[in-house]
Length: 153
Image 1 (cartoon, rainbow, N blue to C red):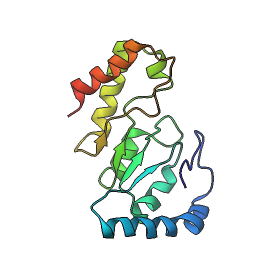
Image 2 (cartoon, rainbow, N blue to C red):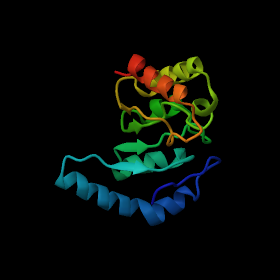
Image 3 (cartoon, one colour):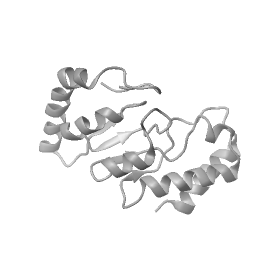
Image 4 (cartoon, rainbow, N blue to C red):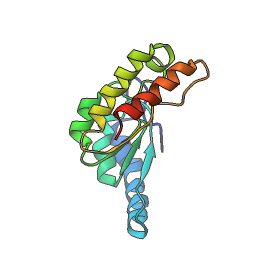
């Protein structure tokens, strides 16, 4: 299962996750960990804050994207509560609002702030929340990568 949440909340309850998905995730991810040095990566958009402890317990290593624009997905909270257990793949830029309509300066500041939060003590793979859309001006994409160069490590 992926995309377990929408912008306003999860698609189903924690109880449903635990009953139908967690055991399967655990078996699959334990197998991967026991047979390799691979890390387990899960793509799930949306508001999935309430699932994250169970995902970690089931063996998740990397979460993508980090849709901090969704309910209960505040960067500071995610990093504080789960940063020692997960690598955050993304969350460096809101690609829908900031990247599409921000100024170069506002994009650089936005990215800098998110890198400082998610990248503190490691555990961040630089990426925006979602794919860059065709309407994003080229100068905004350049600002995104300039910020990565300036503030990424």
